[in-house]
Length: 234
Image (cartoon, rainbow, N blue to C red):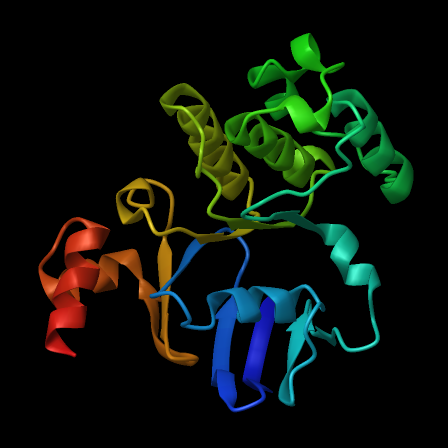
């Protein structure tokens, strides 16, 4: 569904992406992991069309995304830090997004209900805690029933109950056949969520393999243990 082919991107002297090629298919939740500065965020922004590669290209459903913005309607994006107008209420932000998107698909308001956002919908964004802002960001990412979900540190700041609600929602959407990309530094949270691992370092793709294969290669059951062993070997 999403294919990056020999994607390279430099910012000055920094090579953020170095000839990266990956194929991401429907029905999988894929962990995009690596140390800070590994190129994860640049790869996400390239997929979203926010960064144009110096060479290589990205296709979405076999169509090159360059100069083609319509594909973004099929992506739900949850940024690591959601930024919204401070003077708007939760309800106004959600209504604004509905008005901007003008989606003809049925809305998915499961997370709005599960997080109890209706009960506090008149609260201004400037008054919200970081965790509640995360709930708004998550609800907006899933709201338009997208084919692809890109979630950047989705559980950061969430309390244990909200974190579990979001995890169960991710699992449910994966089982519907959607493609989900997740970045997280909390590897223990990914064990029950993902089926594939993309590991990057210094802008280069180190490996892309199934979680089962990674476990077999390392002899480790937990993702954190498997990654730790690989890093020691390198």
